[in-house]
Length: 95
Length: 416
Image (cartoon, each protein chain N blue to C red):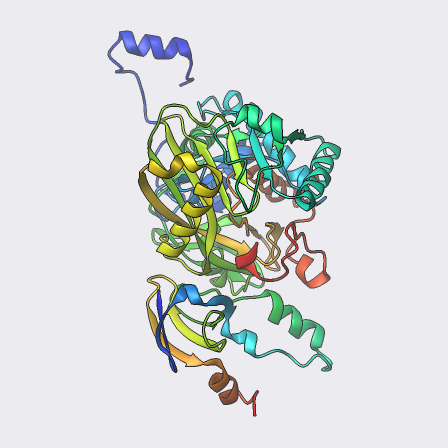
């Protein structure tokens, strides 16, 4: 698979480490009342769709950026690649 | 019809005109006591043991394609019980004991071959870990034997003992491990279940569950509604998709695992070997092909095919261990979809929906578990109590912190 890095252009997926569902960006607040239930959901439960899947890839052997890749889990076709930083910002998580 | 040597000779002398289909092709009834979703090894084994051991009646197995067309037909056929943790080892040893009597039990030649499995040791730390695992196996009634480097060399002289980076320093052998003809397992269970009245309904896809007041009343299928007192789901890589129809999210990711077979060779590899420093395991099929595999590709996939980097990685692992492989040509490469759970161990449990039961999360170790998985799931479906060897395989173990994490990788399914 070739991941079209937003800054570096097309890169072999071998350069990356796979993390999983992009919702892992959205780490719950550990101090909240409902933290226990929220962390169970965050750590263990997954949508695991057959089709479009937004997922985190880490460019370990490249610029060490985190990417959010939209990939079809049935065909392995990659339709969109964003910097995870931008996605996190749009979720209100990063300044 | 019972199969026997006498029967084979009789049919040979009478032009093979007496053979009958091994199972019927019934139309679905409007109602069953128990419906099993998924006609793979685990689903068929469940139906077989429900009918035979737990004396249940009016059972159906529903399969979207043809039986045995999923992971039971796509694996590397290895059986073993060399686990360490308390929640796992008694279960897998139960499974290995069932394998040992399976062919007599269901009167079908599954070619169970206890040729032994050898996990190779490449460092002092690994020897310590394997001794510990071997002791855990022995404590649970399994067999384990620590081999020195010279003992390994006597049995497998062609391995690369002097690899500069990962020299072989010994091995942990389980002599009762081995291989099985994988398709025959599905067919044997299907035939055995069918003979006991189980309806095996192929080309019938489940499209939804009918759930009323928190109780599962049956399944909607491509061939209409089928009512059921209890529904058991055993659909391996499709677990998340099927259970999503019941509104559930699972602690599972689906990943692709590739497997490989070479051209046929004369007998070269007497047992199953696994590389302790990379991820490579290999056995030789009775047709002569070397059957081997390695890591999962590592990303979520439902594609039943993988990518080239993992093929290269597996081939490198094989060459590091077994340099004689170099001139052998690959015949086939294929992929299967693994339901990778969050701790690397399976789930056999009730759900919060009354009458809906789940069996899945087998990661890439489901084949060896087939008999015990079927037996334990049948036990749960018939008695509403977990089988004594499967009490740890609960849904709520993640929430309650009772993970069964053999490799200690944490909630990262692609590392188990």
